[in-house]
Image 1: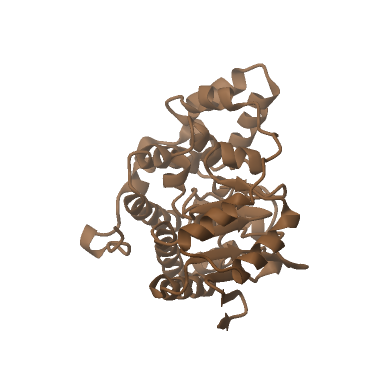
Image 2: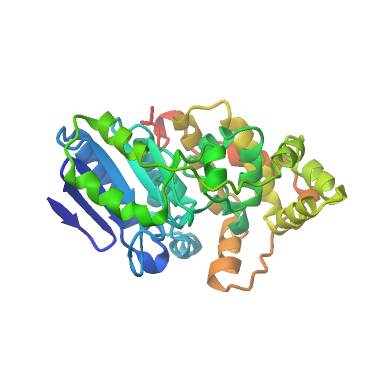
Length: 363
């Protein structure tokens, strides 16, 4: 059985449901249509006892693999947010429901996280039971650069990284490779990129006793990742455990080393308001289950577009980065030191009563 749309190719090969994201010109950035296609096929396979496991990969302009998923379609978000298109609401509600389904799928879900894995790409992989990285993996949650926050369950999975790595990744948006991803509990195993095709093909050709056997076999193909981990883990914990963003930046700017200065410079480029919001998000999420975290993030994303009409940090960030590409966002407030606690706390007030929340059904 093969089911094809232009952007999501789904087929059952042997006992494994195989999904290829097929929007290579956009680095497989997720559209609302792709979210709906993924949700439909996963719900179908979840109920189908003949499908023992699911495997998902991206594609690049040369063919399969090479790029997993660069996130959500931020040009759509900018256009929809600018004119008040209600599909922006549908996109986030349905994307977060998809993220929840993947975490709670009940069968092995194997993500081949080759190339770019950012934002929404993390949302459709972090809930997987096997998260595979390669030497080409470039992983990040870079949302503060566009005046957003690490959503798609980012509060949940980043806050569960060791030490204060979650705060560091969420606030800076820095990119990590395979060895760091495994060390930080954001990936499960390393596969050289030139071995992916053989493993993928074998998944559809072999007979497996059950889903656990599929997972064991893929795990048996893992090799040791090249040790290229960052040496700054101690510094990450030192600075990103501080009480608030101004204290972090002051300490980083006062330090006498290149890593600290570069990190401070990165934070100074991000939306000051969203840095404060993101720190609050990660620290709240550390004690939350996934469903509650996704409901909190759904509240937050509504506020990102509608809390202050005409002054959305997110629309301004996307404009500067992806639309006009002037790289000069006009953040409001302009400085980290000028953000009021009241402005931050407003992001955590739900626009909906609990019974009417768009994600009320998530458990």
